[in-house]
Amino acid sequence: MSDPRRSGGTATHGDAPLPAQSGARRRIGLLGGTFDPIHVGHLALAHAARDALRLDEVRLVPTGRSWQKAGAGAGVAARLAMVRLAVSAIPGFVVDDRETRRAGASYTIDTLIELRAELGAEPALVLLLGSDQLRNLATWHRHDELLRHAHIAATRRGSHPLSGFDAPVEALVAAHGRDALPDAPAGAIVFFAMPPVPVSASALRERLARGERPVELLPPRVLDYIERHRLYRPAAGGG
Ligand code: ATP
Image (cartoon, rainbow, N blue to C red):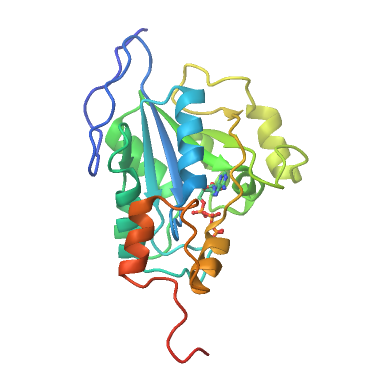
């Protein structure tokens, strides 16, 4: 049962994926987010996951209309453009814009089902989450179906521990938690480490609204885009 990794069917938007290492199942990490704006915390998570989980590709999947975050600061097109600018030079990182093209609310389960239909049963899909999102998982639409289509890999973010979850998430971790990703396309929950990067998009938006230039927290091309398009500035006249 040692099928070589699939080489086709990868819908990329920009960069070519890294060539798969021979002899192992292809692993595709999926990092969904509002990315309003994309920042160094997102990129650190993606890099740490790629290295710790030996991912062949990291797909960043910006949400369309986020069902959990009302009143996002920038429009969909600007968020997508910033994600593209942030990762276009990073080998193996690709942008998947399907949620931004979807009418109505964005649900991760729909994205996973679509990806499975496109990529087939073989590759491992790995949903990458900060611990704040894992703690929130039971509120996600059809959350109990996610592991049928993907693994979940979570890392600690700031003050949100990777333990002491609410009962539904605790039960999922008890049933599906593993020390390492198994050789399977889906079904496990694993944790991975990353150096803490204390940044959030909401705090960044506040700083940008005050006219600050948080150069250390944003990829340079993203900060340039924000400034050129005057994003996250208070509307003239206030209110
Ligand atoms: P906001 O402040 O508006 O809530 P955010 O910074 O949390 O935004 P999202 O786009 O919602 O950004 O995050 C996408 C994913 O990245 C989530 O899984 C989140 O946990 C993770 N993430 C965001 N920032 C960090 C960080 N600093 N360290 C680790 N993970 C992060």
